[in-house]
Amino acid sequence: MADSSPETQLETPPAAMLETPLAALHRELGGRMVPFAGYSMPVQYPAGIMAEHLHCRAAASLFDVSHMGQAELVGEGAAAALERVTPADVQALKPGRQKYGLLTTDDGGILDDFMVANLSERLFLVVNASRKHVDLPRIESALPAGVTLKPLPDRALIALQGPGAVAAIATLAPGIAELPFMGVGAFNIAGVAALVSRSGYTGEDGVEVSVQAEQAEGFARALLALPGVQPAGLGARDSLRLEAGLCLYGNDIDETTSPVEAALTWTIGKRRRMAGDFPGAARVAQELADGAKRLRVGIRPEGRQPARGHTPIHAPGGAAIGEITSGGFGPSLNAPVAMGYVAREHAADGTSLDLMVRGKALPAVVAPTPFVPHRYAR
Amino acid sequence: MSEPKFTKDHEWVRLEGGIATIGITDHAQNALGDVVFVDLPEIGREVTAGEAIAVVESVKAASDVYAPIAGKIVEVNGVLADNPGTINSAPTTDGWFFRIEAADVAEVAALMDEGAYAAFVDTL
Image 1 (cartoon, rainbow over the protein chains, first blue to last red):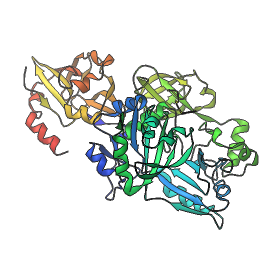
Image 2 (image 1 turned 120 degrees about the horizontal axis):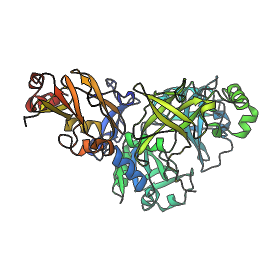
Image 3 (image 1 turned 45 degrees about the horizontal axis):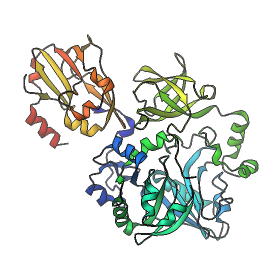
């Protein structure tokens, strides 16, 4: 038996693999540690990916996402400054609210996806671990005098996700239950000063909580002690986000894909689209006018066989029309799920496709996402 | 039934009357995680030792399974199509993959015994 999947081919660990503040806790919990974006991270715990995934959909799961980049942007005109590198309408973001956006390249590719929260006197940013070394200099380069970007490497980020997540954490800080979806607030949780946003990457209700690194382990232990809370690793995080139809940077979006191709046009503020005042605006305008040549779509393979990333997509019995960018097995659907890019004329829901898995055509159809309905608080 | 033999690709082989039953080891199923799909070879196919002839897919990864010996596929485990999780719950019994009519039973004898395999796993 040998691993033939690109997603899990482990590179030789670099000498200096980074660890999150929860590394000791992961080992204590039996986490199977793998290299991810330069960090040693738990891909799963003894329960396994399937059980961890299903537990999150049924109760509440704790994920360590401390590898992600956190930063704050301070100063008069911070929102306008950030708009120089993103098509998101940051200036319209109200205090106590968060939104999802894209950083774009000058030629209209996606530099990263990120979250930005308005904390009144500052903006709070969360970017991908694998991209923070690119994002932060890019943002920095766009700042006028008086606006400063402050990386927050000494903060941990812990996600508690699932239908029971908010009820569980609200036993420690009742105000969290009042947060709307994409609402943000500061709370004292089990004696720890925490920045809480009602958001996540699973399609379930839940929160992401930023705390000081030195308090992270005690905080995580307090959450794990709550009824119904179990730890979940990166494996379950990936299958949950895939079922929820959410993009993974580096798989589904990158510097070659545009916001329009990625079906993320909704992240571009209307005012921004009209003004065309963001990097890559020309490509976005052209693709909105003429249609993108390819589009990101959801894909449901027939049967039980998964189609992994980089699987070629053909028209039935015909020519190559695209490629899978994320694919695996959806435990909640008990069926394989995937997403990928196809030529626009093959992008309508219900269109038949052939996925070329190990040289054989696996029939599939274009399907709407999310595959599993989102259950965000509204 | 003879004592099982093992390969460095984490397959077990049990020879009985010239027919070798093959599956993956407990170490392998544990490393792979929850199995969701198995692609098995066609009955009657002639295989050579070391040839990738089956694929086992977990939630996260796809892995090849190799023919540990040369011969002809005479049976595959039909239970796995509907219950691939049997590979996790009973890897060395009900979770077997396929049976090969050995071209040369001496090939089986040349594989690792249980102790040698355990020592090999310890080096990983």
